[in-house]
Each structure stands twice: as C-alpha cells, then as structure tokens.
Image (cartoon, rainbow, N blue to C red; front, side):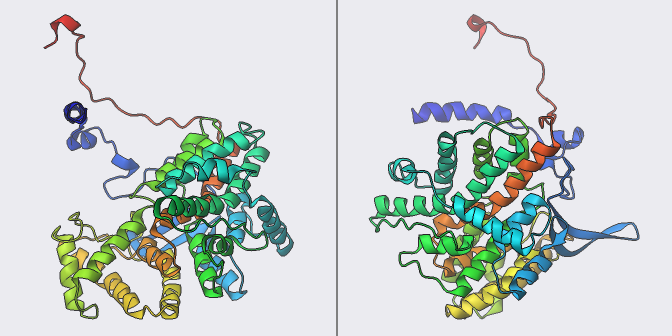
Length: 446
C-alpha cells in the first residue's frame, strides 16, 4: 500500500507552479509582496502592528509597536504592572469591546469568566479521558468541536450568542489543555492522573498553574510572568494566519466552534504557533555543541554553521530571530525580556539567560553580514517564550496550546468583528495557469 501511495504521490509533481508565473501574473505568494509587506485584504479595529515610518517619502524601519484597539501594548502592560494586578482579563475585555473597563466593569467581567470556568458534566470523562490525544493541539480542537454538542443553541450566529460562546471558550481553554495533557501523560507514561477543579476567583494565569501542577502551588512571580505572556500573545494584527482564518471561516456563516477549531488548526503549524518549540530544540542543540557558552566567538561560529545549513536541522534558519513585520525590534520580546531575566535569576539559570542574550545580539549581526540583508532582523517573542515556559515547569507539549489559550481572545474579537461588519463571504480569486486540454477516452489513454 505504501508503494502505491508513493507512486501516486510522484504524480503530484505536476501540481508545482513555477515561481516565474507568480511574477508574470503579478500574484503575491502568501499575500505578501516582494518586500514582505502584507497585501491589504481587509479592515480591522482590533489591533495594529507597526515597524516603519515615512521620512521624506521613504519608509525606514523603526522599533516595532503593537496596539490593541489603538492603545500601545507597552502602556497597557505598564499600567497593570504599576498597579500590581493581572492584565489578561483586562486585555480580553479591551479586545472584545473596544474600550478599557472601569474597575466595576472589570470586576464584573472577571466574575462572568469565573462562572464559565468549568466543563459540562461528564465532559472530562467522556470526551477527554476515553480517547487521550498525543498531540495537545489536536486534542484541544477535538474538545472544542465536541463542546458543540453540549451547547443548546450551537448554530445561532447572532452577536449575543456568539459572544456568550466565545466567553465560555476563553474560560474553558485552560481546562481543555491541562486536562488533555494530564490524561495523555497518565495513559501514555503512567503519571498520576491529576484533575484539579479550577478556582473561579483566580486569574487565567493562576488557574492554569493551579490545575496543571500536582500540588497546585505557584509563586507570584511565576503567575505574573505567565499572565504577561498571555497578554502579549492575545492578538497580533488582523493579518496573522490564525486571525485571518477566523475571519475567513466565520464569514461563511458557520458556527463558533467550527471557526475556533479552524483557527486552532492554523496555530498548530510550526510556521505560526509552533515556532517556540523550534527555538527550544535549536537551543538544546547549541547548548550541547558549544562548550563555552560565555565565549562569544565560539557561539558566533556555531550560529554561522546553523546559518550555512551545517548544524542543527540543516534548514539554514536561526529560529526566533527575525519576523515578517518587525525588523529593529519586536515590542513583545522587549517587554518580555526583563521578566525573563528575573525568572532566570529566581530559578538559578543566569548562565542560560546570558547565552540567550548573547545569541539575540550576535545572530542579527551574523545574518546581516552573511546574507547582506538590509531589512534588519531582531529577536522575536518566540525566542524567549519557550525558555520562560520551561522555567515555569510547563511541558513542551503545552507550549502551543498556551499560545491558543491567549490567542482565542483575538480570534473571538475577529469573529465578532466579521459578524457585525461583514455580510459577504471571503472569497479571494485564484488565477488558473493550467493549459486547456482535450478529454481522452479511457480506452485511448496510455
């Protein structure tokens, strides 16, 4: 059977479209032009990514900026940190409703999310425990689709009903992810089966640590760092792959659960949500092959080997360095980096943190010199997030699901925006380049 499939797969070479045809027909692959700029496919009020400014009619790269509903994320983070409180729930409110909540509105919103922070009766037993998934993202998607059958009104796409469904899913995602992982570890590796009930009064970050850890214990620093990670991953412009997926799928008029499952499928991809796992694998390789982490020449030499496809996965990529939009800096990485330093000191891993900072500084210089790039590159948030999750004791299988726990806030905002502003199904044009041919009767085919 494998040989037959291999033989059939060889026929797929006929499906390859020559690169030159894209230029000939002025079609931008990946909806990005030759300079890497995204083709404008829609309008959004939800978030904005900025990395350039116009000077004398010429665009020049500047430090990256990320805005949620027009508010600088740096200001949002500075605000809740200064007041010594968690910021993810406030961020969710802002993304969904377009305004920062008052103290009373925020308290009421947290209470509402807390009331949704449970799964339907017998759901954990029947949907999660009876068929554990070895891939947590697939398990998460299956859980979302199964929740459709527990909803008394799953196909109602009115704003009120979709908002209710989105809020429930935002509250339920940490449970789906943690319970799926703990069940998988129990049935596959023989670990103790841990199913902690969440506490409605805790924040999303606190609850995730509480239900995931056997002893349910965590430090204030750990919860604050995880909360910051959720804030920084909650949304990233309407053009990112999973947000665009949410727009496309919801524009067809389908239900909330199908839309979120599709967005999860997008985020699972290593080119999108799985990037920090590649960073961690690369760092494992660097730590194993660079004898002296504090020797910058030795580190630089190995980075050149990676770039030249002589080391690690031979892809020629230094993972976590560079971004489709940001060039000078990724504002999320800049905000995250200070907390990475605090957490590494707390965990006694300063030497590893020093290696990360060294690579973050050396890699852009090496890439620029070796590839003569003028765009410029810098460390992105994926470069640090895996290291943070590892220091929090979070398993690598949950790195991308944690991204989803955060990003469902953005997906929900985009789905609701599509419903209230849309009305037309998203249907881009694809130009056919297949030559016309005559039909050949079966008896005459060779």
